Image (cartoon, rainbow, N blue to C red; front, side, top):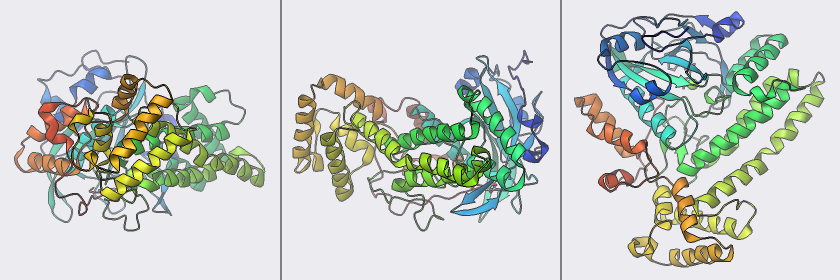
Length: 489
Ligand code: AMP
Ligand code: MG
C-alpha cells in the first residue's frame, strides 16, 4: 500500500524467495546522518513525495537509522567470477531495503550501499567512503543522461563516521535504484550451491520480473539466456559509443536486466585507444575499453554454464545449444556496433555497408595514431568545417572527411538529417576524468558543490553543446596516461 505522505510503496518479492538466496540484515545505525545530495527529479519520477524541508527525515531513513515503512532489509547471496576466478560473494557492502512500486507500476530495487556489515562481508566493514559514493552518484546519473540503461542514485547521506581504508575517509551511504540487482553471479551461486528446482524457480522469477514476454516459453532457461545476451550486446554497444570503461566486469557486476551497475573503477576514455585501462588492479588489461565485448561474451558463457542443467536434460545437448547461441555473439555484436558507429557518422543501418565500415576503421586508426579525443572528434565531424583547427584542419583528416561527404552524397543522405542523427549519438559532454576528480575533491575537502553541480547539470542534457560550459567538454591538458581508478570501497 502506498504511504500517502511519502509515496513509498514497498512490495518485496525477493524476501519471499527461497531463503538461501538472501539473509535478512539490518543496516547499522550511523552517528550523525546528513543528506548531502538528494535527487528530487528521480524521487518525483518514481512517485515519492518528499518535502525538501524534511532533510533530517530523509537522512534518517536513507542512512538506515530508521526503517522505511514497508521495507524488509536483506542482503542478497551471489557468487561470481572475479578476474576469471570463481568466488562466493554476496552483498557485503549493500542492503536491499525492498522493492518500490512506482505509480506507473514499475518495480524498482531500493538499495543502501555502505550500510554496515552483513553476513557476506567477509573481512570488510560494509561501509563506503563519501568520495566513492559521490563518484557513483555523478557517473550513474551521467550514464542515465546519456540514455544508457543504468542503476540510478537517489541520495548520498554522510554518516558522520570515519571509514578506514589506506587513509581515513568520511563515510557515506548511497541510495541506489535499479530494476534489480540480479546478476550473472546470482545464477552461478544457485548452480553451485542450490538445486535444479531452485534454478528453475529462480529462472521463472527473473522472467516474470525482467522478460515477461518469455512467460510462456517452452524452454525458459534457453530463451532467457538469449534475451540476456541481446540486452548485454545493446548495453556494451552503448558503452562503446560514449567511451565508457566499466573497469571491473566480473560476472557479479553484470546485471541480468542489462543495466550498467556496480560503479567502481569505471571511467571514460578521452584519447581513443582500445587498450585504455584506468583501474589500478586491472594490471593485465582484462577489462580494457576494447576488450569489453569479448568479456561480455565470456561472462555470458558463465551464465550459460549455470543454466545448462535446465536448458536440456542431456548435458551434451545443452552445451551444444548454448554454444550455438554464444557463437552468434560476435556477429550480432558486429552488426549492432557497425550500425551504432554508422550513426555516429550520420549513416542509418550501415553495418552491412563495406564503404562505411572501412571509413569507420580508418577513422579509428587515425584517432589512435594521433591520440585524438574520442568524443570531440565526432563533434568536429558533425560541426561546421569553418571552425576546424589543428589535426582536423590538416591531412590526412581532410581527405578522410571528403570521402565521408562523398559517401553521404552517394547514398543520397541529406546532410541536415545526417547531422541530426550524429547529434543524437555523439555526446558533447561526458564526465571528464580530471574534472570528476576535481569535483570530488572540492566536495570532500570544502563542501564546494560548484563544479559537481555544473557537471550534474550538463550530464542531464549531454547531447547539446552549451557554450557556457565548454570547459567541461575538454580532456585534461596533460592527458590521462597516469590516471588511476580504484574499486575504492
Ligand atoms: P565489488 O568489487 O564492488 O563488485 O565487490 C566485490 C565483493 O566485495 C562484493 O561481494 C562486495 O559486497 C564485497 N565488498 C566490497 N567492499 C566491501 C566492504 N567495504 N565491506 C564488505 N564487503 C565489501
Ligand atoms: Mg559488485
